[in-house]
Amino acid sequence: MEASGQHGMPRSVVVVGGANIDIAGKALAPLVEFDSNPGQVSLSAGGVGRNIAHNLALLGEKVELISAFGDDENGAELARICRRAGIGLDHALAVEGQRTSTYLFIMDEAGEMRLAINDMAILEMLTPELLESRLPVMNAAAVCFIDTNLPAATLAWLADALEVPVFCDPISQAKAPRLIGNLSGIHTLKPNRWEAEILTGSPDPSLAAERLLDAGVEHVFISLGAEGLLCADKGAQVRLAQGPVEVANTTGAGDAMMAALAWAHLEGMDVVQSGYAGLAAAAICVESTETVSPHMRVETLRARMDGIARL
Image (cartoon, rainbow, N blue to C red; front, side):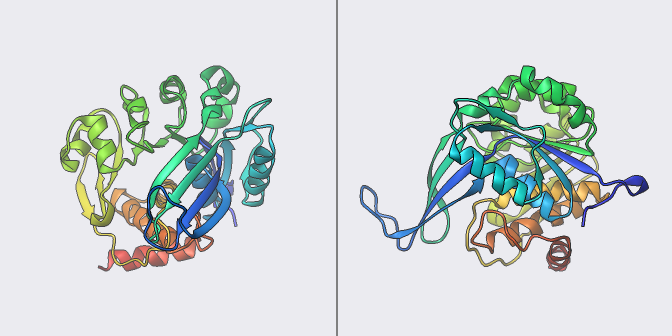
């Protein structure tokens, strides 16, 4: 069932960012370098933007994904998977003669990602010039999510041009610097502690959160791994504990958290309630062997939120 906003109209979320084919290898025993390791290999749809869109669709939101797809078989399969998941692609780019973005990663026997290679050059084609015609669609949404797979010039343009709340994940230490100078246009930012340090110069998450708020971000959620989540706005800073989880696969946990933060905002939750939603979604994700948990539902999320809040 789709979530509704005012006057009963379905509220929409537009996601602008990465979509790719994931090729995952999980070792069955401790990894040995420079050798062939027994394990399991799987192929699935991935990408930060796509994963967030998929999680939001599972939470009942009407989602449009704006990304770039090549004209290869991977692109056709990726589009099929997205549509089956309830993700709209009416405004995605189809790029002739280009390879669809691909992410190859290896996990150890515990499900922790140990090494990855990304072939995402096609996403550099998501330029302001190509996205300008899609700006009315983005500004008609209730929320627009962007990720740092986008070129720095595109991030700067979107931060200035978007008139709706902008949610952003810095993704990695390598790509986080693309946000420097563009933070004032972001409503909600979810870095981990190392990305927050890169953006602010402070290794202290509390001070980093203060600096991000001073730069114009309204809500800051700094992921602290096993230590939980730091939630901050101009009114308060609160650290929330994760609670017990049975980890099957850590890939996609941050994407699930980001989706839940957007969902919580649409539900009118404050920064602490949103933090519980983010932690709950991450827990649901890591307990599944899949990057996007098939168990992500509003009822499951709310029940998990209640459990974490009672800790």
